[in-house]
Length: 157
Ligand code: GDP
Ligand code: MG
Image 1: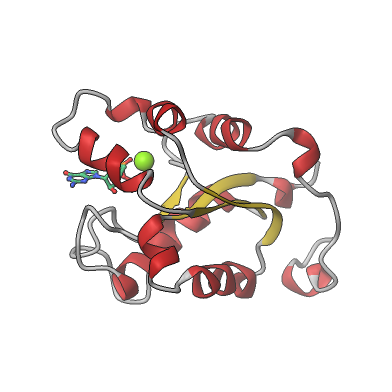
Image 2: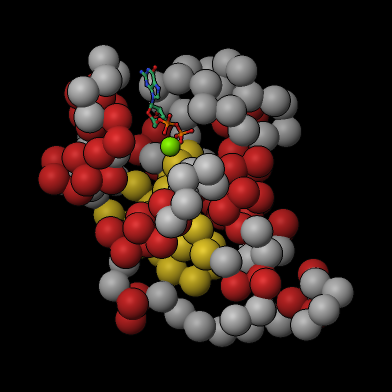
């Protein structure tokens, strides 16, 4: 494993799908040099929603969150790259789009905390990325390959 093999779980939420922002999200991550290693267009059921957002169970917004995330299709993805989890979180911006900096995905495409376009694994919760990847993907659904431009993205390949 080289240092650019970190994987993180990313999801274009139902609002992103309905608003036609999936391509934009994929584009931004691709342009950054991150590598797409898995993708699944799917609808999340109640059980998966509860597992994925288990840490928020009991909070006042939990029921609304589950209702929203199961309300339509999502694009679940795994992206790989140097410091991928933290880099994606930075590109997402603050949880509340109203507070997210312009230039971030939430800051450019959202206005409402409940509809904030994108999910990315929490970089401050160690192992969250691996847990979420496992929850959504089987090993054989993740693809190993080299991006043709990797030697231009990274100094040391
Ligand atoms: P994230 O890691 O930045 O997505 O934020 P959290 O893990 O704290 O929360 C998970 C998701 O729950 C957020 O992305 C929001 O969609 C939703 N959420 C968090 N806090 C609130 C809240 O106070 N109100 C509402 N309506 N939704 C919230
Ligand atoms: Mg979170």
